[in-house]
Amino acid sequence: MKNSTKVFAVSALAGALAACGGSDGGSSGQTGTVSVELTDAPAMDLSSVHIAFNTIRLKPADGDWLEFSLGETGTLDLLTLQGGVTEPLITNEEVPAGEYEEIRLIVDTENSWVTKESEGDAQFTLAVPSGEQSGLKLKGGFVVAADTSTSFTIDFDVRKSIVDPKGNALADFMLKPVLRLVNNLEVGTLEGEVDYAQIQSVRMEDADLAACSADYEGSVYVYEGADVDPIDLNVERDGANPLMVVPVKAQDEGTLYDWTAAFLTEGLYTVSYSCQVDDNQVDDTIEFEGTQTLEVVAGETTVADPIPLQP
Image 1: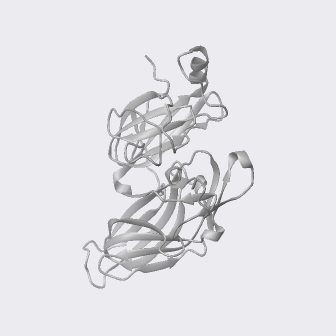
Image 2: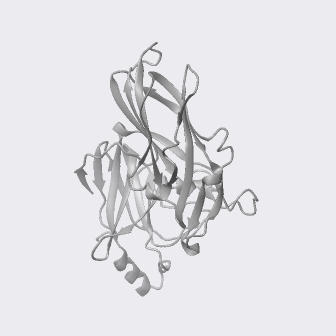
Image 3: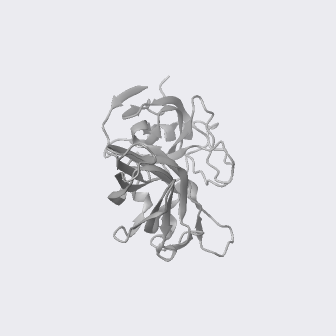
């Protein structure tokens, strides 16, 4: 395992709160400024996920809801916000300093939709239960501090959030949001390379290995903790799921593919690669390789050993 230090922008894998202002939770009259950005952990079979956000609300622990219009933001394709890319929602809004207990994103359901790679430009409806009333909810405390800048990231995990309602008449797909909030001072990045051509060649020659899925270069699965036995993603399974599943992307030349998992809190993680399609909703017997344990250090990028691993 190799480590390389990189300074990355306070952008996010789903949303960042950059707060300047007082540090004690109940300071009367003190204020800070808050900025929110949006980012996404990727989906598998969808080619776009367009969500129309129209309002963001912040709930002080000892105060009324604060509401900010997102009229200038418009409809965002969350699948363009991957690998550390973000989109600002609000920037440098002045708010009371202190503790906050919840964030809500209000969604315009009628102007939200998804597309699938297999269906071209055809738009499929997306139901967002209570999205226009109570909104997408992220509970959990954070502090807007006085005379200090603090940044947070909300990870909007589309891959776990978009589900097939299986006959539910509300819409073609349903949004059941999976969100997490991290402090950007406490996060780092994992990245690496995959030699897809070599992996595909070995699988074609070895009768005991399942072939790579057609027209699919694979994904890297990221799990919290060391030496985790890799398992597929099943959104209907309680626990044991990977934290995120990151698709690989072809480099400009050669057979190597890149992958990046951003905004991970400090600690140990297990990563593993599979070139077989995971449908996310049943227990698949997909095969993994290149499994390794990596350490995330705040403010740094940890580079994984190339996959497949060398003997």
